[in-house]
Image 1 (cartoon, rainbow, N blue to C red):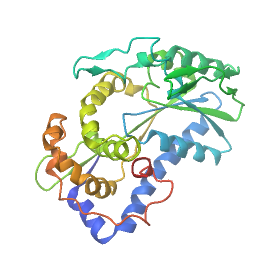
Image 2 (image 1 turned 180 degrees about the vertical axis):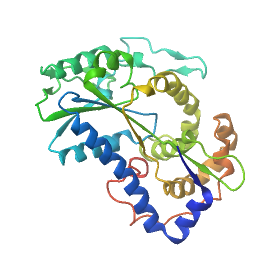
Image 3 (image 1 turned 180 degrees about the horizontal axis):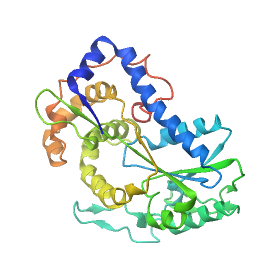
Image 4 (image 1 turned 90 degrees about the vertical axis):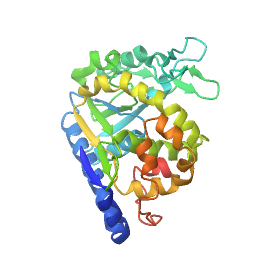
Length: 307
């Protein structure tokens, strides 16, 4: 786990922003290249790549970056979205989250994991599968999507919070590479408690939800305890299945997320405390902003959260 001081981040943001951003991006990029190299070396007998990680770890962008890095090794990566394996609403009972009094939308019971496991086994065996498609407007699974068969120089990438679930990994461990993505860094102020990795991920999610999912910070805060419960139940127990790990945290992102979210976060100090995020509120006003518009590369993982 990497540890950064707020003093260091503020100094780099104030006096050396362009180089700071470049170094952070390169550190992330180097991790992706190492992962792609190992996947390529083992692709002949491990054509399945399962990408896992908690909310706001940057799974979607990193999935794409790994695919692009694999292409440089002459390996084409097919993509399967776990979202397309959601079950049709009304055909099953969504389990409750008794701790938070809301439906447990993080539960693997919301997904047809046996079908995904079957499809992956068929791909390993050289067979063709017909991918399902989930229609989010009707909340229903639609059959008859595109077909897929893996060629010898291809792998398939699947990202999602349940990709390490025993229903999938149990029968496919011999043919799969597990990649675990997370924010694995902390930020320590000169005084007060440090920001833990899940707090840094909250900032990402709050920014993304407010910009792209019509969900204000108050709603993200209200869901956060249930999200964390889902991580404890459905992700953490299987983290040991990972062959490779990537820390997607970009230290400069704190200067962007904290300053952009500051007005909304100040208005919800009590909710921050209820969600075990009080240190976020205590750090407001202490983070040096960055004029980043022309400094962040187009393929940065941060664009997943700030646009």
